[in-house]
Length: 249
Ligand code: 13P
Image (cartoon, rainbow, N blue to C red; front, side, top):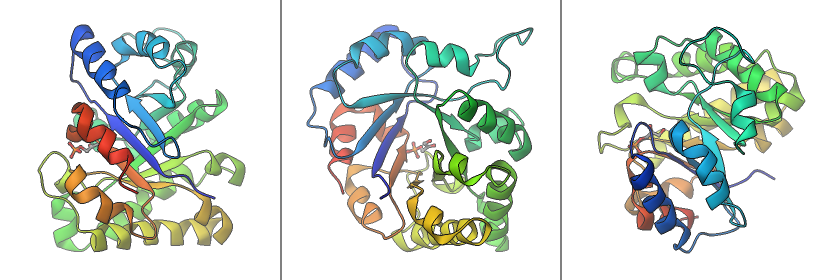
């Protein structure tokens, strides 16, 4: 059975002290223990948070990684390093990485492999721009991103992936995809997985929605048949909102 998941992507926010304060406040919130709850802070927080989270039900994610174990890659962080500080999940292919750092699905597919080789779980992001939606190519865009980033995996490997659908036009804009719009894409993603692999795998993969998720819209989104939770930016920076999101299923 697939899992309900709430993952907070802090993006490039909060210094050491601010991060400690937010995490301490989150730890005081009622978090639904049946929901897989994940926090993806900037790298500088990971080691400390690993200690602060021991004994809690909250797991740690990184927001990116490199695809080599070590070497002359100035400024990069490897999965082995992430694993050594307790990271269990890595967000890959976020639209901000695709847009600002020129990451394409092929590059991201190498990262997916690397994360899986180290027995961590990728949270693979996909999503169309406003122009692509207006042109009516959003299904093609998503299909291409999923195929190039994930469909080289075998069934076992794919089962260890989480997918996040994040329409770019809904990220940080306050404009959320309607539950119908999100459900339509999630169902589509499941259908292409079923075609490439089999319906059972498609049913088992958690697919998260991301894009202005907040307590006021989460319940309706998460109630949709193929939406298994959220990848949350802004609202994850507020302890109370984040706690509420885990109680929105
Ligand atoms: P917002 O929730 O701030 O729209 O960000 C979504 C996102 O990009 C999560 O990865």
